[in-house]
Length: 600
Ligand SMILES: [Ca+2]
Image (cartoon, rainbow, N blue to C red; front, side, top):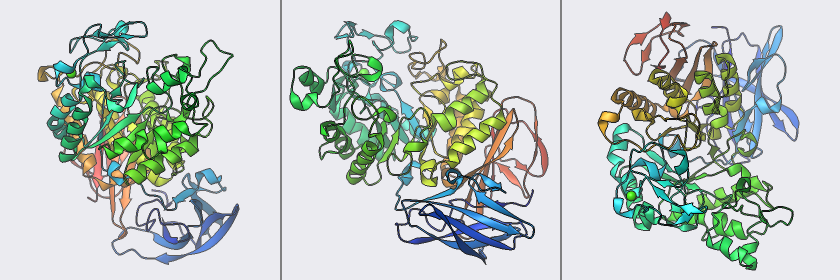
């Protein structure tokens, strides 16, 4: 190992996270470079202030090198800082981008969030995403009946459980899944090891995906209605599950009473939508889809109704038992038919959510670069398509999520992942919602050519990565899709006959989840890339306690079956899945992913 220097958010390096503004916090740097002096650099009023760092010892630290400590003044909501290490004939800057001779821009500096409280239960969670119509039918008596009503000008349809997905049923076909089905499956989910659920929308809505909500104040009767929600949340909480709902606050369905009243000319309701004369559709809508009129937050009426008012939708369902919100197209919400005021609205939403439930977990669907929105004041995190799931799957599959070929290599992948991780404050990075696939993009197994070995590699990295992991229903038993594309093909009904399951895959997913849920390093550790070749990548997650003792997990994966030469850092490592002890210079098959642990 080359001499180096390290700093991160774990206790040996940062004494406490989220201290109030105007206090100060002890921060430390470790180095085995022959330093002659160390300074902490802090950005204040646009200037760089130098503070002296002094040598300290940590009681349980037994390695090489030395530690230096300084007091970081928490003078702003987000404080940027870096270290300067002086050598006899040189000086180096240590930022989140690593050691450099030149001074990096402030974007790469370490960040400290003042007064920030993260919903830490999310860090201890492994989520499971459920698309309710397709997960499990607990009560056929509440199912939609063939032709029960019309939607977008044609009758709604039903499909028997297990029927292949077809294009005609894209939004019309109902399979009959419901909340009782989810409740019945809690023992299955407990056995799998997950402990939090994200349900795509469950409110009254005509389509099978329910993103076109007619009534946010009631659960869809075809899912079992309000009583089924009460029953599910009580049973879920009794089984130590959290339940996160899907909030669609950019638009409503065109059958919503507020929109009907607006069309009828009611003033208060008209102010909740954006009207226009220069378009064949007289109001703004989500991608100009007439059934999805866009909410306008300009007047304040929509903010009261949905986000922040005493009786807002956000507050009501937290009060009634939900533990958080996933926010549909969070980046689009705004005023006047645009995204204007987006961040202020999300801050208001989070304040309301937290005042209703102090540990509510709020994360947005931000499909593209979410960095600008994630300063800690709005959403706790975002769905990590941009900084994890999409590039990882692009590397492993050789194509994008739209099946455009790609020769993305492991080096570029790691550069991209590291950059997006370091751009976020640490508590936000740990609260990012990581996923390989969802109801909106192709299933991971399908993208990987139905190669379960590659899927295991992807899942190994998912369960080991910084942020909150989420599995899409059915991934664990090898559910795939029949046609190339995303929707509706990725929404097959979950098979409940075990003869249809890949039980080996399920056992491996159980093991990965168990390792994740037992590891402080995986839940709260720092992230550092240690292997990056075209075909193999590896990162280490490290949690260094205040004593100086480090728990570390090394996650490794390859996209080929060629053995990968590795030199493991000093000491023995244990394969956390097989129990094998490894050390020194070795050749490893990483084609299905490996997790090596040390110091636990
Ligand atoms: Ca049903």
